[in-house]
Length: 214
Ligand code: ADP
Ligand code: ADP
Ligand code: ADP
Image 1 (cartoon, rainbow, N blue to C red):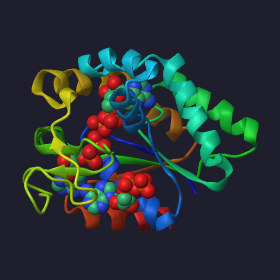
Image 2 (cartoon, rainbow, N blue to C red; image 1 turned 180 degrees about the vertical axis):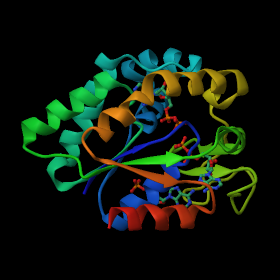
Image 3 (cartoon, rainbow, N blue to C red; image 1 turned 45 degrees about the vertical axis):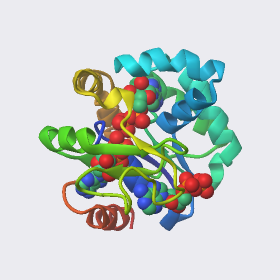
Image 4 (cartoon, rainbow, N blue to C red; image 1 turned 90 degrees about the vertical axis):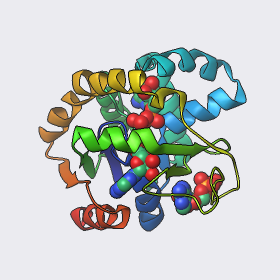
């Protein structure tokens, strides 16, 4: 399966992607996680991305599209993938279409995680992620680690993302509405969009997504 996950920051994309990718046995590709890994390794790409991320803006397309395509190549896109956080604007969606067309493949579905804005704000405020691997995600109230401040998966230290502080969150939500939401109509025109109500327990949302995929 070749799937794109969309939804506002904090909707639960990363959390759902981890379970869906495992169930479907496809690689989980998160551009946010790729940027954070580059930042923690101090690569030139990370240095370039950080100022945009800290301001709550999108990293420029030239950088992002190249990085996403490299990762798709590495994953062997034809075998399936779950994209989380890419594409995030029309330019990226069009670039992905061109890339897939070049491979003679298409997307199977675009899952749109729907969560009210007040819930998204609560999810982001409590989000804690692992220093060693930002795909290991917890929540201070909803998904507590067994030991406070310590990642259950790998023992890494948990921390709050720089861009999860309140002023940046407001900016990221604005960017989501103005730049990312238009891709939902773009994919609706291709009849790929399935809306998943994403309130409720993590497992319940996973079940809804799995049954939507058939
Ligand atoms: P969230 O899951 O909270 O929406 P992500 O981890 O997906 O956040 O992304 C964090 C930040 O990384 C974004 O605010 C943006 O600056 C950058 N980023 C991630 N994916 C993209 C993308 N496809 N295009 C541009 N910037 C991106
Ligand atoms: P995104 O990748 O869309 O930004 P995350 O998967 O990182 O979102 O989830 C944001 C926060 O909300 C995390 O702290 C996560 O533990 C929590 N979370 C995810 N799904 C749920 C859910 N169904 N109910 C409550 N909290 C959730
Ligand atoms: P890999 O390095 O092979 O990609 P990871 O170290 O990222 O594996 O994660 C190990 C497993 O734990 C993955 O299957 C991932 O989906 C899962 N995982 C990620 N976050 C959490 C979490 N908060 N709680 C439980 N399992 C998680």
